Picture 1 (cartoon, rainbow over the protein chains, first blue to last red):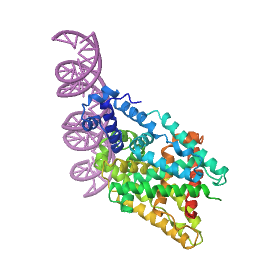
Picture 2 (cartoon, rainbow over the protein chains, first blue to last red):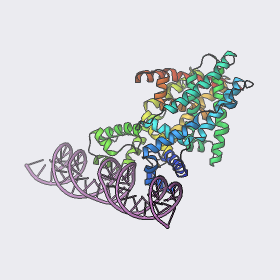
Picture 3 (tube, rainbow over the protein chains, first blue to last red):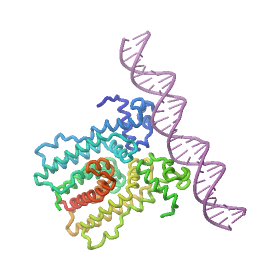
Picture 4 (spheres, each protein chain N blue to C red):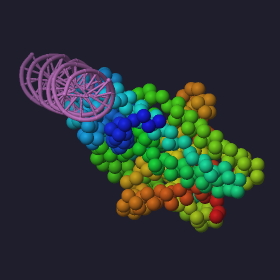
Length: 207
Length: 207
DNA sequence: AATTAAATTAAACAAACGTTTAATTTAAAC
DNA sequence: GTTTAAATTAAACGTTTGTTTAATTTAATT
């Protein structure tokens, strides 16, 4: 896992920040080198090329994206509580890795570079399966409707979150969120609550 | 409005395609010139610079984004029908302009260039007001719950759509959508239905 | 202390970038 | 048909790009 030395870790950290802020094409290796206080040749020296640096970054960060389900399958939790917890976990996870998420999404969008997204897709498939299991339990207990497209629930959760983050200036103005903390608190509290409410409503909606 | 000649329109068309496919930084004016069959100097000649071309593109396309509400306020439609129609309209609009939407979103994300998004924000505010009016009507008629954060509904609608589009390869594989038409039909039918169902559920959910 | 490998540097590289120039062609006006 | 303005072109501009080179410093090994 961490077969990277301190310098490499610093480079990855800086690259994550700059790539997510300005995009891959919008970030030069000279930008990265300056911010990381290293010579520009060190990036090729350590990672081979700028593109391989991106790949190393994505592979290194992706393992963090799989949800931590430790307490999620405890029997004493109701399906409703499990869904709420799952959504909370989703948002916490994305929020923690929002840099690499932005990078991946842009790279997926641009389709310019053919990075191997298999690991990323595996995580998504695994997370979807966890959700399916919880919903099935709720359906068997007669709590949730049968009439729902389960595979479209993750895009609803994550899409709402991403769209809110992407239009940060607009919503910060709309909700009068002056500081970064204000905004983050709104995400963790109000937005999360809204998404939980939305999915709960969807899962209990008949007709 | 259309104070652009045929060549300029062609350039805008090509720029929209390439910017949305490869991003602003990932597209060179030589790419645009080649695809539009014009000399590279024509872009500076007509638009002043590459950045001003982007600005002209966004301003030119943004007028299309405001929802057409012609039939939406007819009294004979129920609030439920109005919401469904509004969502359908939302998705149709975005789908038609998905190129420029991708460009704008990336530019918002990157925060590298300071484009004037006022016109874009105005459209969003207007569209939100339309939604608020419909929901208020439904609340007064006792059909919709009071307990809902209305301003978070557009991000739910658009976020779900965008996230689905952004992860096209993943969902095309998941739902076995082989052709472009298959995918587009899924968006227009299944995804739209899912979003309508989600918002209807949210608006009638108590507690 | 001498030797060897790894880390780091400044400089140079060719390629691609956006833009400008100056010359030429095309079209419009008279 | 001549004049004038607009459109179009190829070439060159100076930067910036990612990468490589070759020299030097640092650290580890013997």
